[in-house]
Image (cartoon, rainbow, N blue to C red; front, side):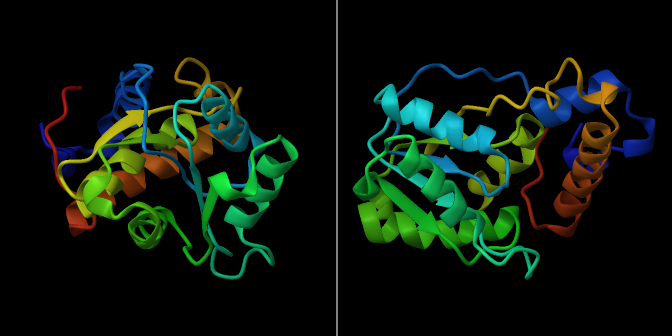
Amino acid sequence: MKLSEIEVSKLSRQQITKVLFGEEEDNGSQGDCIFTYGGKGIERVDKAVELYKQRRANYILFAGGLKYGKYTYPEAAMMRDNALKMGVPAESILTEEISNHTKEDAIASLFVLENKFSIHTIKNLLVVSVPFHYRRGLLSLKTYYPQWINYTWCPANYQEHQPDNWWQYPESNQYVMKEITNLVKFVREGQLMDVEIDI
């Protein structure tokens, strides 16, 4: 069925997990850049730095602004500061500091990538985010970025946000249920492309 046809209230826990977390594993490929979605957790910075130190890509792009004034310091700047402390050189870090949510992370980062690389030269992006952000994170890029770009999903290691335990933690459960609701809503609104999904 298509994502837009999903009735969230009728999904089982296993179906929600399959839709949001996906079944795609990191294939170890090289990337032109490590695209890191905005967020406060240090886990995504740890993952981006790990990929950088494995020489999977020569640059990290951290996205994320003030979240409509929720923060006084951009998420991307916070992540950059932590990456610098972990030994990543400043010249290897790009930031996008004006976005407020996932779609804006993707769209605003497109200009950063264009200015640094020229978008037509990019072949593969390594994508880092919280594990349950797989479907929306990749769909956001596939909706707004050129179709020739490939993506390698590299989820950050959030202990309580894993496909085999998210329902055991009230906060994580709340995040996941909000995510599946928003995903279907955004697809129906046309903010994200509609795709066939086997659940």
